Image (tube, rainbow, N blue to C red; front, side):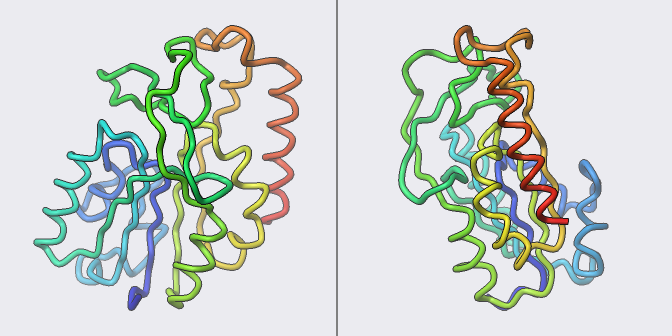
Length: 212
């Protein structure tokens, strides 16, 4: 509570976006622009940043970023959880690409590099519950949300349209249509189909149109 501006980093990976926000650097669309005056050097203490990342391989690094920023009196916290359609737990798959910080790890077993058995079971957080219980209730004046949740957006966003419209001022989203494309070079055999790609794409498009 008490934050005039809130940045939600859904799918933090190794924390680059939050690090950039508090380090006078630009990153994919320039968070300082979308957060407006709150992200100026003199007002950055007015920004609260919450990151969500389920991959345990990154937790130590994220904690280190959090500790460094706390020493500078920045309000930052990383939660070891995935954004999903419900609160609880879910299977999680690493894409087994440590050289790329396992950037494609997901709640979906979509890639040829993923094993049949899940890498881990991770905590999940319902997006509507997060926004209405922990964002709207605090009366923050500007909310920017970045969503890069490796395919979970197709099931999460359609059910969260109303809460997003009520609480979020700027939404930055990365789509992963390729996960459902059987022609994609990294698609797991038997997972993707043209029918799935069309259906998932239509559902997400409809959700985004409802937000306009």
